[in-house]
Image (cartoon, each protein chain N blue to C red):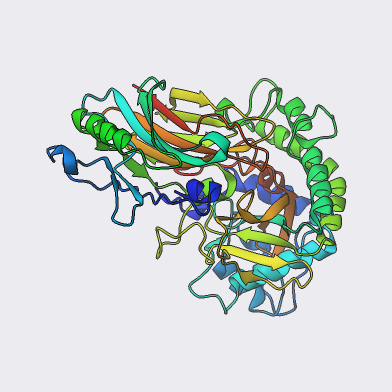
Length: 207
Length: 303
């Protein structure tokens, strides 16, 4: 949310990212993960990032820059091997109701459910370093590397790219699904000259 | 995340560190009414009780002799901030103590202003060359560290201060201490120059690796853990993020960071300061050059 505000202070999207949603039995129109347009015309996102019921896909929202630098918002669908399967741009210069309907249908059909947001330590904000334990795993981030360990065994390593024009990657948020051992991590690249930053989201599955 | 108790952040072999620093004459003279602290076990966790013990007899915190590289203006800045953070005007308490998981560092920052941008950029570039970026210059701290350890120090490659065929943990720390001392004069000069730029300050942070027991979800921006001490006045105050800013520093922040410093306080009330480089993903490497010992990992704190 902060990043969108930063990129375009007058941006008309309001993102209400909520992780506490109803169960998966909720009908599509009011599903646990959905996009809607409020009475004020603003866009609301609920329950993202989310994991599909079959555990095969993760949906995240990502601010983007459209033509001529106008802000936009896209929904990315990752497979759990970290590859982007689909990208649905739901808002650009105007809201695309058709894309919103399509995205909601997709989230509904896949019975997507919100992933659990992990509270990052203050060191993430201050020093861009994270060391935290959740369930039986340890998640570490620092020096542009994300690591997942269990009992001193390395389960996953992601080396994030750095660029000359952008500072970062700064870790922004972490979301976890304990049952499937799926992690979604959001990173941020900044800088006045940072016009073509690397992808902000990383999705990984570990044993 | 489990809050690590302060003792878990203490050096793995605190007894060794006592010998290290005291042998180098780091303890400070005692005021006549103060108890002799030589019998107090050094755990490198200077608590509120320690502060009360030291200052309660009329003694003040002092700078240790190993920290004379820090410009006088910044020395006073740090001493004033320690007195403020430990002092009676702060409520609720702003720190559990000076140790490797709570209160151990500050950022020398300059408020962004187009009028001083070129000066700011110049000192930032000088500081980065000295400390954070491995340019291949043998004088750079990270280059020296790589040579000392035998590989680039990065947390994903493991903690560097371990005993192996190359050398013992203590020997590696001693070698790194020399590397740190080699860059201190030049970094001190950069800090001194930066301090002359208008709106320079030091931003101090407490509760770095854990939140206070009475506020487990303390906000990142909370003025309870953020203290700004302008270098023109050296008068500390809790820092509240002004409207329109998302962070205190960086692209969307009020300030830019020029250089970082880390510190510990011994039981006699002497403040030991080092440069601070967290680009490796470790936050205690320079602190080990104060204690002379490696730090133990604990939940939420991986050295």
